[in-house]
Image (cartoon, rainbow, N blue to C red; front, side, top):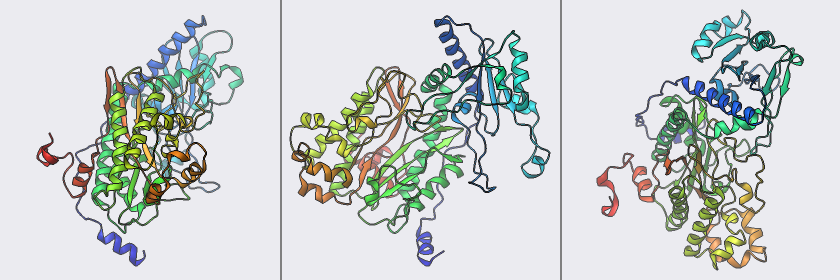
Length: 511
């Protein structure tokens, strides 16, 4: 380790972080409920289509992968649809559900004897039956025979296989494959939209896990706020977050690659990838944008905090931050069943534009700006996305829905009306991105709204994003995220005050 790195590490605060959390036991009843939910939905669909209620849902779990041609095995994380239905953490499994009876079957890989030497005890079938609360367990090489025996009908048994488009990644889910599959009738159309819609609406047990992931992540974000200082590297703040969620929260996985952006990097929407690996040195005057979320038993969180590296907001930082915070808070207050997500995005855009006009960065009529899509210059991404077992949970676009084509709106990951039980992120932002601002300054319609001399003041400013995870309730919403949001709250926590703040710490007599 170089001398400068040693110096920086030695300068980090050494007080041990305190966590009030303890990793909860995960009830496998959660996945029993998920399977029951799917069976009911599938039966309803078949009866509505005047089709016989028969067949098996068959899913193939994820497989372990090595790093390219090496024998280095990458840390396994279960395929999400399989995790939703069965909760299995091990690779190489298949799972089946009898649509008529509702009975569930797990098929485990038949492991070689040397597995016990290198990787540990070879579990008996009864272990998986009990642990994952399924009705039966067999080996993968018994799939064909077992399903034929369970079907008990003449002719080929029917398999509902998972095949459909993920509207975020544009990738297709992989249908199960196994030996002797030609002996079965297969349906590649029915299952995917029904199972995806099941995942959109969360049960109480699912919400409990998402809440826990939020609690762990919120606590870790606060710890990062407390320990940040100039001359640190971005990756050191990432490491504080990762340590906290694993050490105190039992979260081995993150929901996604951590975005630890400071200064001009905070205008890079998905910073933190291999070509931009959170490696910049922090400077006095930087704004920090940290987008990080823990995952616990497959269920995730997605939280973004923005704050000044110095611990004190400058006037410009406070102006941009409060513009985004006002949009964030207004959207959350407006969320209720029946609300259009497109309308929520436009609300956030309009509030940010109004604030930028107050600051003097833009001029003109706000409604005309909205019509000309000026907001997409400062907020180029969508307002938020469904959240669950995947960070960008599927179901944002159902069959027949078309993605908008207008700037900004085309980035929306869903355009649905909100309904009770959905979990969605609210993440407005305001960024100063040269790749968008420079063409806008030359644009015949957009340039009249922009004051270049004022914009120049924000060169290398970066951006601000504020993101919380929200569940839609019967009469509104509930924010699952608990981090400092007001500028004075952030400054107090960064100065060492406990979070949540005590009543006496509120400024100006606020209650």
